Image 1: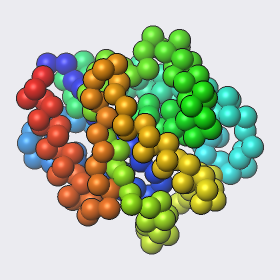
Image 2 (image 1 turned 180 degrees about the vertical axis):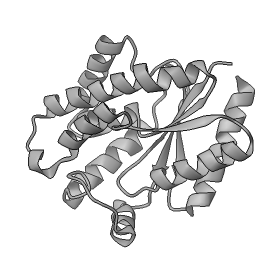
Image 3 (image 1 turned 90 degrees about the vertical axis):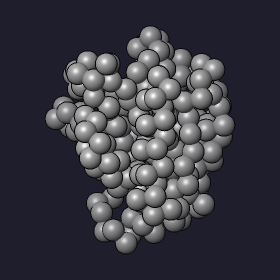
Image 4 (image 1 turned 120 degrees about the vertical axis):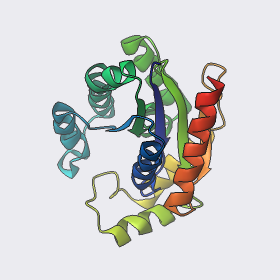
Length: 217
């Protein structure tokens, strides 16, 4: 059986990185082979590119340059990491994926910018979403300040996106909220999960949806 991709999305501090680890633990218990891929990041060369994008020193980088750097990571990960796992029948769990690019480098600026980003992705790869992408889950918070408070409490390293002012984070949330009302090529790939819940509850819901999706297909 060919593998599938499931992505977790959301604003900063929404809990996706914690939830994705728990999802993998559940799949391990069920003997379902899975792997976690970080976007942007993953392979060594991708992490090197990520360090440029997320470095506060380059906070004024041109937005088109930032987009192309993100897409270079996506292509390298897909070709060298994701595809080989899919061919082995793995469930690939992506900590962020295409929707992050659409939101952060596209729709938060404007509808026109978001649609242009979609066109660029399709021109480069032949598709906006790879055919193996089954579901993309948006961990929706009641307020972005919930996520920012989590970051403070967890004392994790921050990056230039974490450090943006509150208006930036609200723009990101507004873009995600709008995007997750839309279908992808007529398919209901996008689903919203209550991100205010405890991480274990979030993970259980996602695993439930993954198992349902696998049965349907």
